Image (cartoon, rainbow, N blue to C red; front, side, top):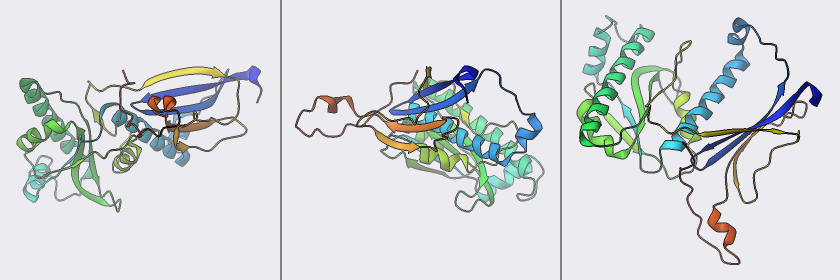
Length: 270
C-alpha cells in the first residue's frame, strides 16, 4: 500500500474520562460495495454491532456516572394484555407489531416524564431502548424497556409508568460503561433502518478530532494510562484501535509520594 495513494488518519474520541483512538487508511479513491452485498455480509453485521456498542458507550460515558439510574420498565400480565389489545395480538406471536406499540408507550412515558420534570425544574435526560429478548438466554421474551437517566427522576418513573413494575440499579463506580453498552445492544432485535436506542436531545456528545499520521505502526497509550482495549493490529493496512483512561493529572507532580488515585469524571464532552 503506497502512501501516494492515500493517507493514514487517526480519529480521537473523548467521552467523559475515556479516550479512544482509531487509525485507518483513507485511499484517494474508494470503490463502494453495493447496498445488497453490504447488507448480506455477516462480517458487516458484526462490525455494525461493535460500532453500535462504541457509540452507546460514548453517550453513557459523556452523560452519566456513578449513582445515576439504570431502570427497567416491565409489563405485568394485565399490562401486557393491554399492550397486545392495541394490535389485536395474542401472546407474543406478532413480535414486530407488539414492539412498535411498546416503543410508542415508551415514547409517551418519556414525554410525560419530560413535561413534569420541566415543571419541577429537574434536568431530564435519558438513553432508552426497547427489548423483547432475554438478556441471558437470547430467547424471545415479553417486551421491556431499559432507560439510563439521572437518579432524581426515579419517583417520577413510579408515577408515570402504568403497565407494570419499575426496577432499578445504580450505575457502578467505573470510568468506562462499555460493558453496560454491550449488554444493552445485544438485547435489541433490531429491524432494518431502526435505531437501537432513543437518546434525549440534551445529551452531551463526545469530542471528535482527526489528524493525519505518517506512522503505520501500532497505537500506544500515553505513559501511565490504563488501557481498556487494544484491538487487532492489521500489519498490511496499519488499522488499529485503542481505548484507555489517561493518567490523572494530579499524579504527574506527586514526586516520591504515593497519591490516592483520582476518579476521572466527565467534562471533556460538548
